[in-house]
Every structure is written in C-alpha cells, then in structure tokens.
Amino acid sequence: MRFYTIIINGQETPAVSVDGGQTAFSLDSLGYSYEDMNQLICRTTPEELETMKKAAAEAVPEKSIDLRAARFCAPIVRPRQDVICLGINYDEHAKEAGMYSNEAFGGERPYTIYFSKRVNRAWGSGETVSAYTGLVDSLDYEAELGVVLGRDVKDISQADALPAVFGYTIVNDVSARNLQTRHKQWYKGKSLDGFTPMGPCIVTPDELETYGGPGNLRISCTVNGQIRQDSNTRYMIQTVAGAISELSQGMTLQKGTIIATGTPAGVGMGMKPPQFLQPGDEVVCEIEGIGRLVSPIGE
Image (cartoon, rainbow, N blue to C red; front, side):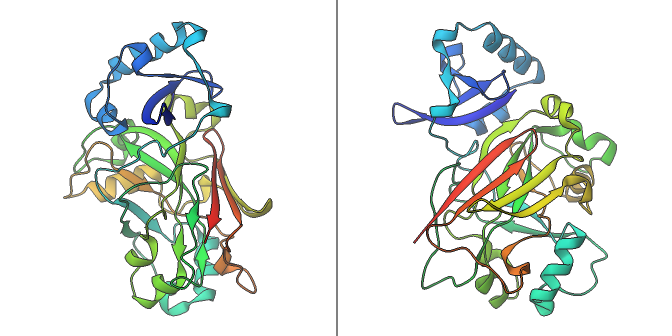
C-alpha cells in the first residue's frame, strides 16, 4: 500500500493507493476517520491495515482520485518530533564532504553520526522551497531514504528492527551549508522552514520488497534535469535495521518517528566548483519503488 496526504476541497486528507500509485481513495470514502497520518500510524494495527487494503481494492472506481492531478502534501505534514538524521552515511559522500570542509566534515568516524532536524511542517512534492536569499549563500539538496516507524521501540535488536517499520518515503534534507558549518553543528543549517520536503507517499514494507527492500533501492537526484546523485541504498554505511537498533538503545523511538538515512555522493558542495541551488531551479529526488519528490526553488 501507499499512503498519501493530499488536498481535497481545501483540506489535508489521508488517502491510500493499492495500484502502485495510479489512483487513490480518501480514507473517509472507505469509512475510516483519521485526522492525519500521525493518527493513522498510531492507532491502526497490522490487521486493520489489511482490512483497509481489502476495502481499497474492492472500492468502486467512481470514488477514486487520479493521483496524476492531485495536489500533494508531505505524507506526514507535521511530524510528532524532530526528524532523526544520519550524517555521512555513504562512503563517497564522506569523501566529497571532507574535500568541501575538512573542519566540518572530515576526520575519523568510528560511530554513526546522528543529528536532528526541526520540522514544524514538512513540505510536499511540488511545494516551493525558499532559497532565503540574503541569509543563505550555499543552498544544497540531499536525496535520502526516509523510514517511518509503526510502533514504539526501545532496546530493539537489528533482527527485530525492520518489522517495526510502518513504511518508507523520500526525504530531501535541504541544507544551508554556510549556516551548517558556521555553527559547528548542523541543526540550524538543516532546519529552516521548508527544508524538509517529503513524499510523495509512504510505501509499506511489503510493497517495497518487490523492489528489493530498503537495502537495495536506486536513489537519485536531478537539478533542472541534470543528474547529480545516482547511487543505491546498498552503499549505506549504517543500515536501516542497524540505525533503528542503535538509536533505540536506552531511548524510546515512538510510533511515527521519521529517520532520514543519509545521502549519497553528488551534492552541490561536492562539485568542482560547488554548484548550489538558485531561485528558479527544480530539484527532483527519486527512489526506486517510492516515486519522485519535486522541489522548485523560490526566492
């Protein structure tokens, strides 16, 4: 299944697709009442999700929504907590980041880097990201696999971690490199309003398995149609299961927690010379089996 939040009659509306993202049904039309995606994730059981899938498969076509014409929100518009991010989680990205700023990104990394990203509201596919001209002089993109937890976990093993996942999405970890490096930690430079485009949907693990699962997905990013990032999640240093397990040691991860798993090589700061985003650019992050996350850049 694929879960969306789309605008219907001016309202943010949770919807579900069972045909690979061609059409969807609002959950209201199927007889389910959820205020938002957070509520759906927190209140549904695996058995109820199966019932929902069956209801969508049997729904009359007249109730369907053509997703090609839909206006998308982020699937989780207002995360319950800050997004947890993995830093420098692909070897080739580690090399390019170190060449851009050894002080900020270089050195030995025997352990996974974790940081958080403030998200008052996540942007959806098609929503314009501000360049913050005058504040930011080095706006960058980062295509990442996003993980959404479906149950509370603490002290979980790697073997038990993946069954705790509700689904997967795309996150563009938009970054202001001048702010990120200026403050000697990454929180401010990652957390301006609009810096967390997400979507277009959350894909459930069973559907993603047909593409090889979270550890074997092509991940890419284009800017104005030019390919910048082109890799595979198999090259992540820390795996999805490893990150969930490690983060949960001594710390409860709640239902709905979003984890962004790091970006591969090809970001703007890694180019020679660096090529940062400008107003009028269009960024498209794509992950196999999930879809395309489009982010136009405004002033």
